[in-house]
Amino acid sequence: MTMADLLERLPTPVRLRELSVALAILDVAMSPDDDPDDRYFRFEPRDPSGVALASMDNGSGDRYFIAFTKNAVFGWGFAHEYPMNPFTRTPVAVWPGLLDGMPAQFEPLTRDARFQLADTFMATAAFWSEDGHRWHTGSAIPPEGEPDPDGAEELFELILDDRPQAFARFAQDYFEVSPDEAAVNAVYRSKPLDLAILAGLNPDAEYENVRAQLDALGLSAP
Image (tube, rainbow, N blue to C red; front, side):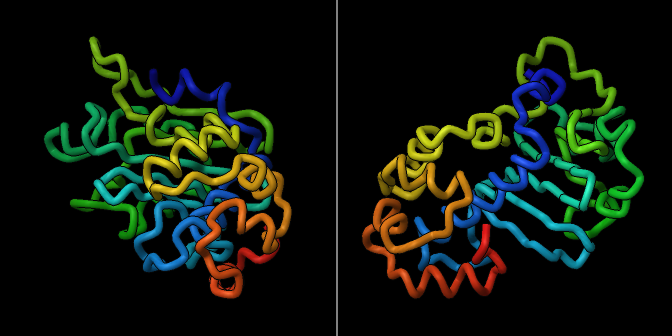
């Protein structure tokens, strides 16, 4: 499947922002002792680029970013082992058509050195919305014979499936902690993180430590 096949499974833009904040909060709650630069999920309410920026980095070369403005959203992901990786082209280049129709306001992000390698925007999948309702993607034609050419389904797994059970399975695998699904659901529904919710997520976490980290990240009020 490609990003084009997955658009109908994306949450609404408003819900996507709520979910992105929730994933960042859950990351801190599940692993409060991790270095901030090593987190799996992050949400920066005021990125230097002028947008709110959600991100995922699995530490193995795959990552995504989702930029939010007041009315628009631009998301992109880079799955390094998939055929639409810019490094499969000579010279290195974004797959043809991948960004066709991308909102012009997000074009500077494609030139931001943080999101480039070899002076090239690193993306295998992208999507966007300008009206707060409909999702769009470019006109890229994937290589023939590749059932999963852009890695989008794996990259955006917890966005495409926002059930608490999906995060609980992920947490068991990645954090080696089994959170209570009701506690995950509370964070997913933007309830402020309190002692009871944190205890359901990670009984070993110190509430004041987690709270201080969320305050520092600007995530106190999801």
